Amino acid sequence: ASAADFSSAESRIDGFQIKGAIAGGGIMVWTEAAGLRISNNRIIGNQGGISGGISLGEQAQAGTLYNNPNVTIENNQILLNGGIAGAGGIGIFTGASGYTIRNNYIMGNFTRGSGGGIAHEGRSPGGLIANNVIAFNEVFYGVPAANVTISGDGGGIFVGGIVPVGGGLSDGAGSVTIINNLIQGNLAGAGHGGGIRAAGVNGADVVAAPGA
Image (cartoon, rainbow, N blue to C red; front, side, top):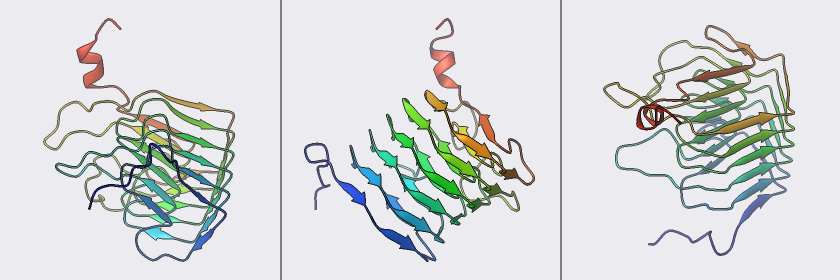
């Protein structure tokens, strides 16, 4: 079967209560979801092997390229979700260029990876995180999560590139604007950045254009 074409007819997930998942998280967006809008939902008490609340793609898998441009996540309540290898609340992974996360309540989420509230992992340029309440989220680094080289950072927000298998420079994270958010009462239990953690945001991009 061929992939659905969202580019000509944008879709939305709107007005749902999504609760109590014990695997897979609340909403998992795999790929080819251009222009998807996730809005006016209550996503509460879900657990995911990647992210607890919402995932756009996932950590890079061999041979898999994700393409989820211009996704909007707005006016949601994302509460009390738990992630294992990804964010507690919202996980943004490589290929989600031009995403927007705005006007959400992202509260009380937990992960043993990085990004209790929001995690931007890998290269997704042009992201915007604005006008959200990001409060009382937590990360705690117990044992290393699968495919995660940096864990336990960013109680509220984590932004970082993904280091290739075998080491070396990441491709960077791409440009991200974080503006006009309330980031309060978040905890990085054994890592860095209770509020915001930026790690490996530049890499091979700087080597390729050292004077830029």
